[in-house]
Every structure is written in structure tokens, then in C-alpha cells.
View 1 (cartoon, rainbow, N blue to C red):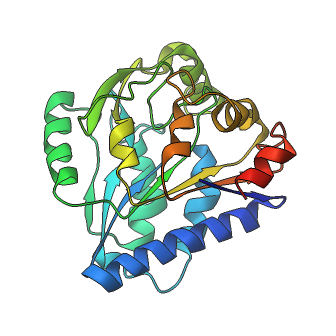
View 2: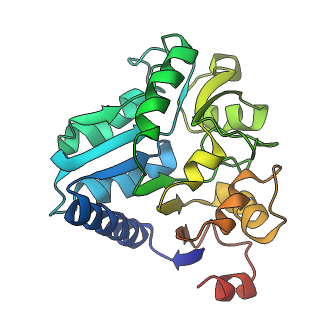
Length: 251
């Protein structure tokens, strides 16, 4: 794992997008296509804006998979991650080959169909973040590190649901769904490269727990430290609680 720290969030997004774009281009050069996993949420705005503005990516050769989605809300809902990806990635780039997780249909059928497509070939690069409770995708603590299935139906804890409300997606905690579809931890780790984009002071405690604490289920994103090609992008706020020795160790 490598940590890259920035004082300017725009610069942080630009550099993260450049690394992601390089991985996509390399996969297309080598095999004629690239397979990516896309994260959602307010913390990903700057990264996706920078990535979709990056020239020289043959988006028609990119196949995209969805990281997670609430169960029980339509794609028209402001909080729908299907809607998020349509507006912030698909429509901006013209990606034609994509696999969205419907929150309106039978979750088991959605998992079966999307999981089969996901398993058909390796993933070149996964874009992820770290939740305020340390979650990776919607794998809240204590996360299942052993499940081999590509997607799981998970129950969201209160901290995760409060984060979604705090980001403005829902008016009240009661409005936030209690269940979601999430890519499993083991599936995320199968990606050849992982780009983890984590801005904002509200993530500082989770960043410290995941990057300095024990690797374990109570800090789900801590598992990224075991992956051979992960870059974690932090700004001054999200990295504020990290020790200088940690930043030096992973620089």
C-alpha cells in the first residue's frame, strides 16, 4: 500500500485520476479492454469529475461494475447509486458496457446476474473510499473477510446510515434503507489495482483506525494494507490524525 497526501483536494483528485486513467489505458493497450469497479458517494465527486475530464481514455472499451447499492429505492431517488453513476460517470463518458445493481428488483437475482458477469474476467482497477465507520463498500464492521461470493446482501449499521443522512441524501435516519447489496471484501481485493480516494475531516478517525490500527473486521478498510497495489489518496483533513511515521512508512 502507498499513501499519497495532498493539501489541495483538486490536485489530489487530478493525481488520483491520472493513476486510474493510466491503469485503464494500460489494460486497453494490453488486452483491448479495461474492466473497472466504480465507487459512489459524496467523497468521490472530485475524483470522478477529474477522471471524466481526463483526455485519451477509450471509454467505449471500458466495462464498469457497480460497487454497492441500497435495497428498496428506485433509480430515480436522489440517493440511488445507479443514478449517481449514470449522471457522474456513464453519461459523461459514453460507457456502453456497464453493470448497475438495481435496488428495486430481487436482490438475489441481481447478485446472481451481476456476479456472474464480474467473475468472467479479472478486474483491472477498482475505485473505492473509506466510510466514516471504516467500511469498505457497504461492508460495515464487523465485516465478513471470508465470504467468497462476489456480492452480498448486508445490513447497514447506524453509523453508516447516519453518514448517508449527513451527506444530504436522506432527510431522516428512518428514510435510510437498512439493507444494501455490497461487493464482498474478497472480491474487491481481487482487483489488480485499487485507487482509494478519501478526503475530508469526517474521515480522519476512520483513516487512523484503518491505516494504523489492527487489520481486522472492526476496521474493514484496514484489509487494503494487505493488497499488493493499492494507493490511498488523503488530504490534509483526512490524514490529520496519522502519525508522521505512518506517512513515511507508506510513502
